[in-house]
Image: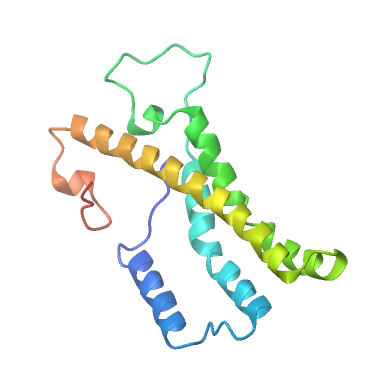
Length: 164
């Protein structure tokens, strides 16, 4: 049940495109509400991919017999707590985009207060994303180290080798 990454060049190309777009001023910071909308929409493909990549996996059941130590797949090394942090961290950004105009128009909060509140939410979401991705990467890295007999092509098919 692994999700195909697509061609190895897609995500670096997408990152370069978005960096170039910002660098050329197309996300201008002259119209904050518009820029927030654009930034939120451009995060959708990578966020959806991350959620789908783990969402379609078949997770071991908590009440099933444990696999012998050392025989787990890489993904089984990620604890349920970090998986929950992963999902919550990625999906909790979604409501921030529609909440912004609602808070500005229908509350007595100042614009600075709205921005502080929403950026605090981003801080928490990105923190959960970062912590969970560190644990996910460590689990995958540990799993790859256990696959000593595999060739580099088998380990890294579909893209360049990742160094941890």
